[in-house]
Structures are given as structure tokens and as C-alpha cells.
Length: 115
Image (cartoon, rainbow, N blue to C red; front, side, top):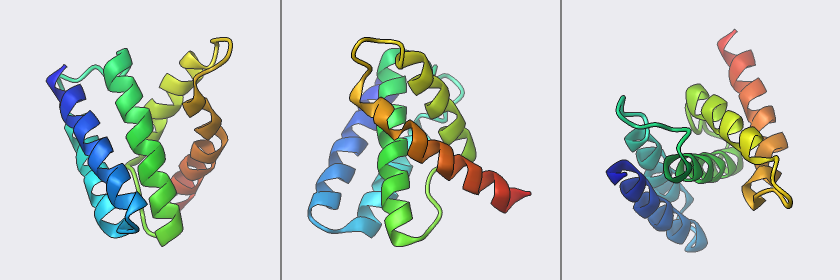
């Protein structure tokens, strides 16, 4: 749960930096938040951790795409997509599920670059 709180704080800071137009710093903060969620004790499929994972990954990838630099790690994208697809069964689905096509395209880019 502590990892979820730290990731949530990073999400807030990164979002603020993005609104201020400081994209490089926003990306660094978002990637730092994702790093917290990579610890072995974190269960990324749990709702608090998963929601932060999905939010930080979407934010990092959107900023990285804009800056034309690498964003989240491939495993972050894979875990985020798994979490969002599982959550996409609600009626209505969570807003974050709108990022599924974008994140799938970013994952495909990752895979083609690593091939």
C-alpha cells in the first residue's frame, strides 16, 4: 500500500509539471513513480497499485510520445494493458480504458525496436 501512496504522489507531481509545461521533469517524475511500482513486493494487479500503474504509464507514454523519447518500460505497458483490459468489463468502463489503443500502439513500437 505504501508503494501505491508513493506512486500516487508521483502522479500528482508529474501531472502538475505537465500542466506547467515542464514536460521533461514531468516525464522524469512519472518514470520515478513507475520505478516504485516495480519493486518485487508490489502487486500490480491490485486496484490501488494497478490504477496508479495505468495512470503513470499513460502519462509517461503521452509525454514521451510528445517529446519523441522513450517512455515507460515494456513490462509497464504489458502490465498496464492487462490491468486495463480486466477493468474494461465495467459498464461504463473506467476512463483510463480509453488509453488501451494508444498503449497497444506504444507496446508494438517497443517490440519492434527491440526485435
